Length: 111
Image (cartoon, rainbow, N blue to C red; front, side):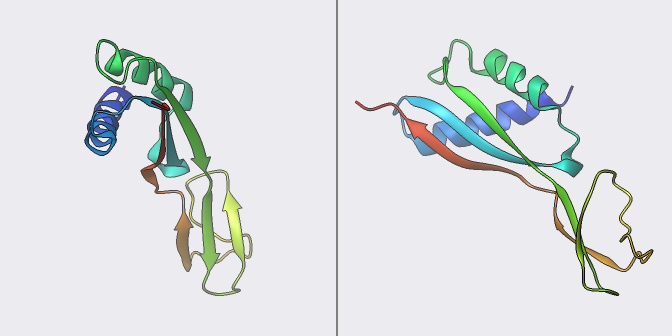
């Protein structure tokens, strides 16, 4: 359950950028290849931020699909599995999305 450590890292980033201001929503992008279960991540968030200045904040997870661009045929394809192969059969592909794990934005409470 690496979601706990991921949430701890996210909380550190959020606290640094919020600079003591109350946070309502934390929006993150998580790529398909990160092998993170969004529901587990949101549950872990509640555990990690309990009894901290971030308690009560909501973690919104945006799933980023796995997309490759085929260097042989030029097509971009969204894949369901981590087998990096174009539907044309070529494995000469470039990963264009799916590895993301980033804090997209913070929504702060109006003072």
